[in-house]
Length: 293
Image (cartoon, rainbow, N blue to C red; front, top):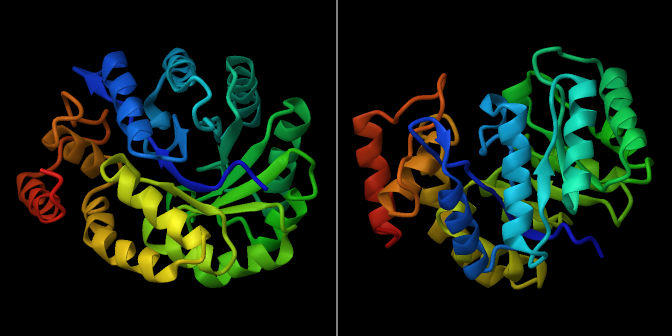
């Protein structure tokens, strides 16, 4: 059975005045663990990996591993649009003691399916660590097709995929074509229960930042086949899942955590910026309805 199961949080990276807030990150990790999160993903899209320096990226991964102390798996974001850079970040994650690496399809370059395969193959051969592929066409402008995922799944240390296409047809094809042991994780909170229902292993979640207990509970129920309970939690969380994307992720998640008093500042790094007042009010309303503030 894969260790990459359940609700993994794509954790935000807190900043104060643009600098990494180390205490804020430690406190957030402890909040997650106290509420039953199944795994932590530092330096993903939600962790603003694109605007972290290499030194900061290394520090966030190291601090996460040190704080978690093996209580749950740590899946470090190590992807880049440069294969060499991806190898360097993945080597660092392995050395730091990460349980696995989450690797986004290269963005901006627009590689072909063959290029995607060769990219992941090069990293997997260079670093012997479990790798979860990450397909998010809305961010990268390239969709890794199920046949390419299945091809990558034949490489020994490529053990799963985070599918953020929000397309159950594509997710079904991936599950159908890949080995049973291959972990297919939803990359969209609103498809997470449905992904488990069709054979997936869980979710890498934005909503878990603010509602870790309910997201973990929903995945526990779905994975145990208790879909009545999972469905109840899905609809309880559904307005919150939508609110996490009223502006570009992770701005709403960080703003929500600041409103909840979990981090000192909800401001992301430029070119992302502080959330507009009207959207803050919408977010506040949803948080209040969910009894989070």
